[in-house]
Length: 346
Image 1 (cartoon, rainbow, N blue to C red):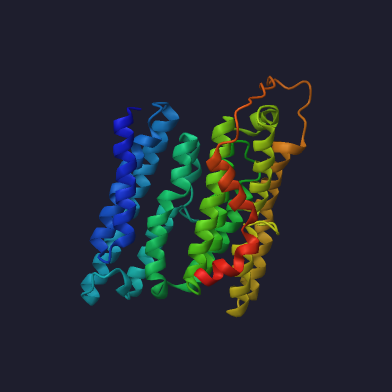
Image 2: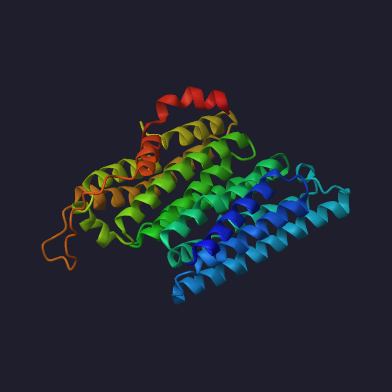
């Protein structure tokens, strides 16, 4: 892709995200979401492969429908209350429509079907943007409207997301699809606590974005797209593989790694809110996603492929590990001891 064109699209992404995050008026937030959608489409379809074109088309249709629902919800609220302010969303019907629209934007169950397909058709770097940066504006809207949203609906969608995200990722062999279902599962954890402690939702999102960025950049460095290639990648960059193992376990939420922090705080907050059954169910369902993270980790470092494998072993490259990946991995693994400081900040 032409570097000037790429610069324009990346700048538009930053602009759209900034507009949505900083706006108080629904029309401005909607405009920011639209700029974001239009800027990411060329990045998804830049390879001109039929899968990429299909992914871009699916993404466009879903995001256009979700944007229309956001507009419809805000207009209904303005019609009934005379308010265009984002934080003044009080009409019950508007709240339900908005929850559906944002769930569609994010890929929460039952509006999750597009996300694995779109991620599978995109390059790894665009997949990284779709999993992290593109989820920030809808998350911000959820954060600003959280007092008005229906807790029962959010809890139901959250538990279903964690269940389906874990369940559907079990038999996948494509790494981008596994990361898509991992994202759906993490969104469940973010949604369940939104109505009770929205700051925890944001903390979970930031830490999830940090760990996912590390995984995507590592996979991109090793040029790995499926499990069978991952099995033979250990000869290429052994140090990077060891770091990937720790990041995957952190993404699974195992102590004493960074990923354990949001899960621990969310379970604690749910227990305080007398939602022990929900906390128990969501904790048990996260074991499903733990299985496929462990499988990824196993393929990364522990298993040696059989000698009959069809894949040639890759040459060991003596390139140093990129500094950014080294910093991100350290943060993805070692932030748990800093949790008192993180809690003081939020």
